[in-house]
Image 1 (cartoon, rainbow, N blue to C red):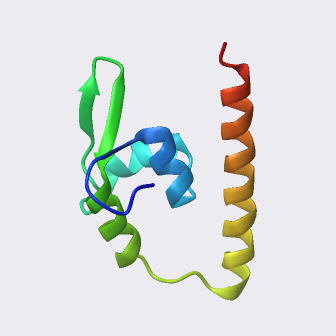
Image 2 (image 1 turned 45 degrees about the horizontal axis):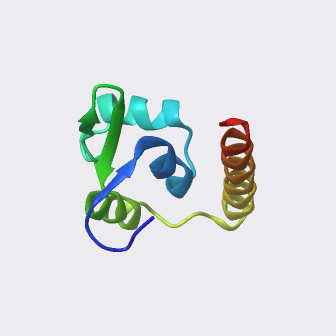
Length: 89
């Protein structure tokens, strides 16, 4: 995820935040401080990178046992992303 302005697509944002795409979508509806989506095209949605970084920074730090779970989730998300990219012709 870029450290400056711009847009980050939903799947990349979910990977960065350690969330699933479904959880990001749910947070859009239920969490009033979660970044609002930006429509990029008819079938593509993203978030302002600066808003994602601010939201992530506002979250409490993970507890020690949650940190290992978060690392495992991030590794699994990276593996799934690589598998998706490998399947694209």
